[in-house]
Length: 172
Image 1 (cartoon, one colour):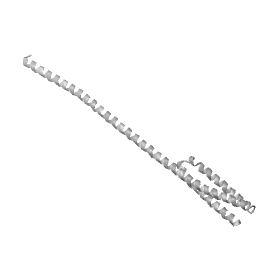
Image 2 (cartoon, helix red, strand yellow):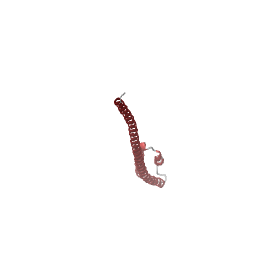
Image 3 (cartoon, rainbow, N blue to C red):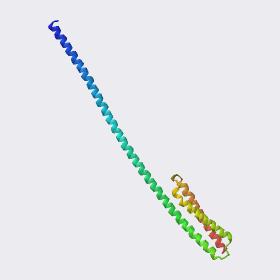
Image 4 (cartoon, one colour):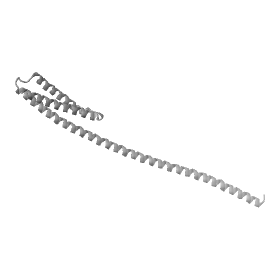
């Protein structure tokens, strides 16, 4: 081999070595870049998950606050309703007491029917008071119906007491 050929051979070999080294380096760099990119993606994913978790916690806190406010509103509405119905029952009690006094004052002039009607009204009053006492056990889903039913019962009782009072006044 001549020097020139040898130089060419060495040059080709060196070029080949540089090419192989460059390819290896390039492959190594590509692996490193891929790893870096994967780590970046994992970090972004972790960040998004953290943000989503924080948002979910915030939403749960807001929902809990809304539920607490709704429960407080319902509790207030129930307390207001019970207060109003207790006042109405107190009026009924006063009217029933007046009827009892009137029956007693009639000294035998009152009919057994009137006595019975007043007793029935007193029993109905006690039944309604019992319904109102179970109000705390009424589910929120049934609250409106309960409110309507007990309101109707008290209104009917008040009308019945007024009717008995009118009927009793006619007898005197």
